[in-house]
Amino acid sequence: MYLEWCYDYLAPTYRNLGDYQKQVEFYLKKLALWEKQNKRPSPDLANLYINLGAAYSNLGDHQKQLEFNLKALAIREKIRLQSGNPLLATSYNNTGYAYAKLRQLPEAKTYFEKYEKINNSGRVFRNWAMYYALQNDTPRALENLQKAVELGYDDLKWIETDDSIESIRGEEAYKELVEHLKKR
Image (cartoon, rainbow, N blue to C red; front, side):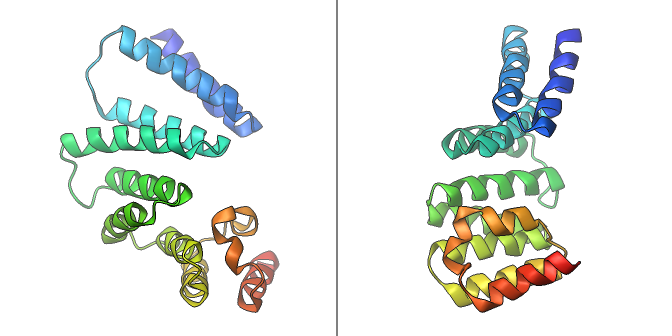
């Protein structure tokens, strides 16, 4: 139990330091302990899978991200979380995001739609901006990115660096949106 606690402490610490490989290492150590103890699938295991998925996403390994997101989603659906549950929403969002990063857009759309039924935050429209940008549908990508910002999505680093919206970066509306965020 003590080791699990240590791993739970160390993994996010390494994330905060930007050392995502170490973050993955400590989450995998925790998972190995979990498996060694032969624990049953539970919400805690689903959370561990979500954390591993996020760590792999930070490393740019979206295939591994998807693998762990799907494992978390399977547990969350098996324990029959209610359809509006924020944990289920997180799983839908993360799974759709991983599919989008892998350019598996029909699958991404399915999970983005499930996420939108539960959540109407700026992140929903960030997802749609990403989805449409990957399809080179510039007007819809910009419209959704604008809506995301209006609803409070303000991750300027993501907006300026994520490769999934590269196709809209040359657009005047995109540049105006970034300048607006920088002035906030």
